[in-house]
Image (cartoon, rainbow, N blue to C red; front, top):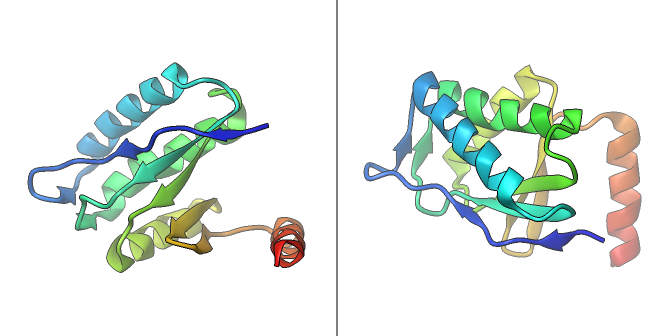
Amino acid sequence: MLVQSQPYHFKSESGILSSRGLGEQLLDQLTLHLRDTEPDSVIPLDFSSIKFVDISAADEFLCKLLMRIASGELGTRYVFIQGANESIRETFEAVLKLRDLAALCQEGERRMILGVLKTPMREALKVILEARN
């Protein structure tokens, strides 16, 4: 059974995550953080201190992190997005669609899928969510 771990808090003095170079650094930090986390964990990626993420940084850290998770490189460790403002969610949506990827985003009690979730998975998720209500 999966357990939720402590959030990974993104920080930036300017509140901005920008550039492919910074994205690479973030990917390295996130990968180390996930490897240090217990297996069977879900780690919230908390963007509540961030105002803006550019496409290059998002592509570099978020998309590549999700590809590593999907490949099994990080074992049974998973992530979801929280605390992302509308601008950040729109950026993530755009880069995830370009890479044909999806991520779960939680804002309070509201949950949404960002990116592309294939039809069978989207239908399965709909059934699960309806069964919870």
